Length: 60
Image (cartoon, rainbow, N blue to C red; front, side, top):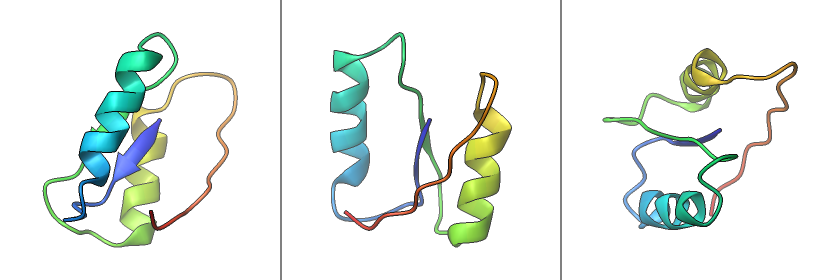
């Protein structure tokens, strides 16, 4: 699960390109507006599947 917090730098395009390479393993959540790091993490966890979650924050 990768979350884009409405960045304006082309991150979401890069994330979708990465997802196309690994569609069975990668999901992308593109938020409509910048909601801040906490809410972006919550959104990612809400859409995550699997047995565990790991949160890594990064500015690309």
